[in-house]
Length: 70
Image 1 (cartoon, one colour):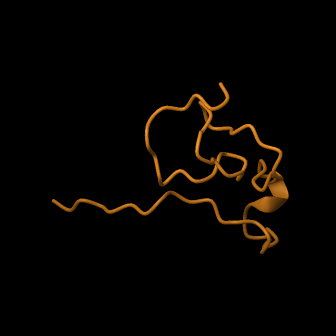
Image 2: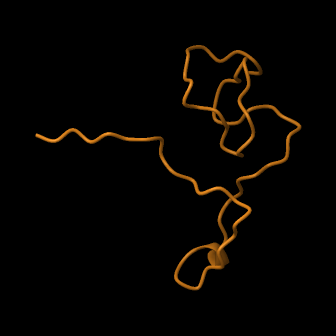
Image 3: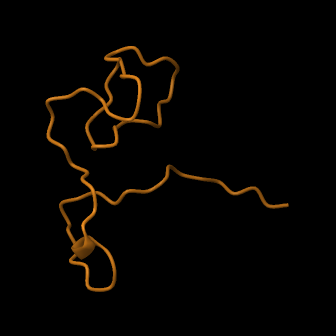
């Protein structure tokens, strides 16, 4: 549902497509947006030792994680 997201998640700035979330986020992983899609599904050529590096795409990673040592 468009603009119906609830809760404050300041670390979630983009959706699964790499589009900005904005002030009123949508419910789910995909924000309704006319902005260009930055992230896309990986192809076979995108992974492995022969993969070509694409400097125009951001690296997908988890937000900063601090591990608890016991």
